[in-house]
Length: 71
Image (tube, rainbow, N blue to C red; front, side):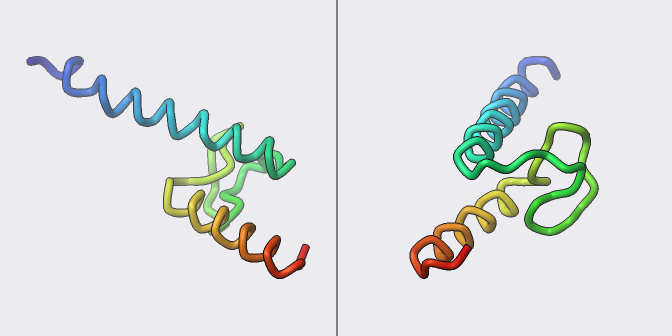
């Protein structure tokens, strides 16, 4: 197994995470602004969250706000 074979699953996961970010952002009606929407870290163009933890934290807080009727 060479480096390309070992990188395959990581690349696939990164692509799945990026697609999930896009789907969630479309659901929330939010756009990429160059910063992580959860922690404020600088990001490359088109990204909304720096990692899965920030994405999940954002989703969790958004869900709580919806449940509490807060916008």
